[in-house]
Image (cartoon, rainbow over all chains, first blue to last red; front, side, top):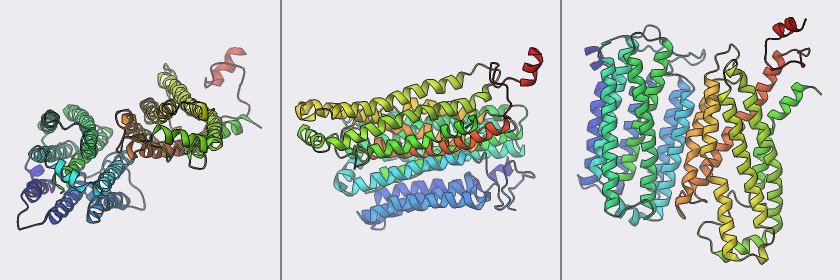
Length: 90
Length: 203
Length: 258
């Protein structure tokens, strides 16, 4: 059991959980005087970072061949363009 | 060649030119990436439509139950960790008695999500917000609805993973099938992470 | 001319159907992909469109009808190629495919027939009626995706359960079929909406399913051509054509007749 807890995915999970709550707080309460625009972009960027962690650590793409790593990173870039990119021109 | 901790002989196809380990069956990534392609189209379509109706979208998003969305994200992340532990446990033959229980835990999280979704949808509809009310609600119900079908399929996959983990002995084919199923589950998780940010938090 | 060549030609029918279908629907002809009209068009706009583009739409309907014939040839080819996976067992998934081919081709044919019907005498047809007829055209185009999904699932299952030393289709094509089956389904919800991404001119109801369908047919057409060649190459020219069923062990057939 301790081997499992000590796998890389466990601290990543804690990080992701914290990041989810942080994203909620940033989106809902907008601390530090963030404007809605800044908060939205932050929240979307945070989501993409979280997704990369899930892909690399939970899906074990960290150990995968380059083309597969590339395919997922390419998706993250496209998702970023179709969300943050279009948001910024709104 | 990159090694996976504890795995002496990774169970996967190897391409001579690209070292690395493909978790599960290579073909499933056609399905997964193709599915994710639909989602980028949906994200883009949503954002483009939002451009023309920013105030409407913001006002409608304010009526959503954000806490439900966050709890759902936390549930799916936890289920993903349990699935990761479960697959590693089975693959490296650690904690053989506990491995099935990880998947049971993941199934419980998943059912929690479904229950939450029911209350969330029911709440919105009772307040008068239906999929045909305006473009935002159409996108909201369609995006989360499609995700929900993926989640239900993911729950069936979790049940399959639980059954394989409960077997007395597992073959390489079993492990490969488990990794494939786990990959699908993680995609269900990561898509919700994006949907939560996009639908609930963007203003 | 030999059977191998005939089979390979049949493999190309998928491509011919796809090209013909698209050609029939694009703006110069029928103008349904992308559509000139939308669910929110007024009856007069619909009538105007049909009157102005009469000949184009009729040409499109004709080309589409001809293309539809190639659709069943392609579907039958896949079913025939994959039939040997069910050797010795009841060919349930093979028959499922053939049933699905019937439904899919009927749908495609009716779509073009209906298009032809709409544009037969648009000047004398009541505008409201013409608009309703036009709506039906798009229901025919987009509503029937679930039968296609089940068809692809049957194909995918046969591919993935093919444990022969030389599989008919490579394993990854099964995932293309499952991808198609799962993701083309967004189109069926078009009946609930008049605007938005699920309206019949919307992204999710028309363009995405069209894209997914196009990818599926192209990949499976190419695989059918390759598969027909492979399957025919294994069988020698002197194969026994006088006994049933095909695919039987021919050494045993010769032994029983001698």
